[in-house]
Image (tube, rainbow, N blue to C red; front, side, top):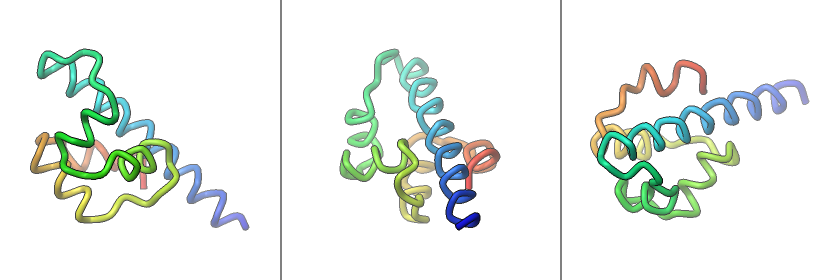
Length: 84
């Protein structure tokens, strides 16, 4: 049970970091109110999947992380530092 709780904390931390990055990225490209749905389209993934990552409901896949990096240039070191 403790492992499961720890994982939830880690996923929530990753989700917060991802949401922070979405807002930063949106402001950087001139879209200060970039929604999760718009960001998911930029990355090329389903909105429901992106929301699951941002809300800490799903483990981000390697495919997602690569797509995020290729689409936005985000540093994986930064993104994962407080996450998973």
